[in-house]
Length: 337
Image 1 (tube, rainbow, N blue to C red):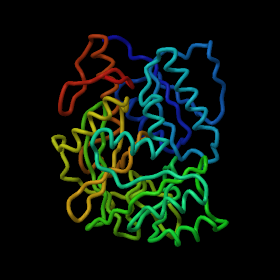
Image 2 (image 1 turned 90 degrees about the horizontal axis):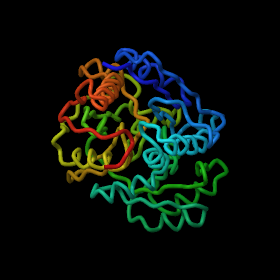
Image 3 (image 1 turned 180 degrees about the vertical axis):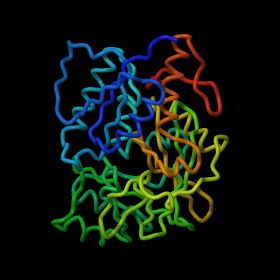
């Protein structure tokens, strides 16, 4: 077996790092180099370090005072790929993660049902867009994370009162998403975790205990404290195993989409209405896992990711076989098939 390559991790939120670092260490990756992408220098003629690069840059980075991270991340990922480096969740995956509009376009291209979604910039455009919805709708920031900008409205007039309020925040770039509100008969959403084009597990996130359910990337919104709770963090009582399995047609579409769009790791969320229609509304590239829930179901998400990474490297150089949970298929990191 050949030596494992250097691993470089682009990140801006240190609190999300320990599970990944532990998973990589458990799989024998001894040379792991976290790179905090808050500020930095990109020299086009200076080649990046050899090894595999992992993108863990979050769309919500600006809420932690890292306002330049997204733009610096874009340029850094382009630089890495221009020099031929292998990147987990590279530039194409990143551009999808930081735009709810692009996610909707890609999901629809793959025949995956989504709530009606529009993007608007400016007060007049936002209010005019609201008039096109026949029923309740929500707003959210196009560059989301943590449920940023999520509010429910029943009319354009109600929205107008909010967007003209001094407290209104349209989010980065002033880009506001308006999205059809899907009423679920039960208080939960489903999150499907995918690693390396394969189904890892699906979980239900219960939203009945003081949280508002919205078709958004934040399925837990504490109205007293604000939209600060990630659907993958928190007590295990909020989560339960979903009956969704790898052979579910929707999961198969998710996997095909991820393979074609260069998404190596993802948590994809959907909500089901009273008629059984499932609406997909979020692709989380910077997916996290509940450690307590993982212990209960016997699957450590970050450890499985590390296993996938190691097995893929060894299969590539002929020293091992491909990581698999349901099949032996794989592709080069971040590249379209």
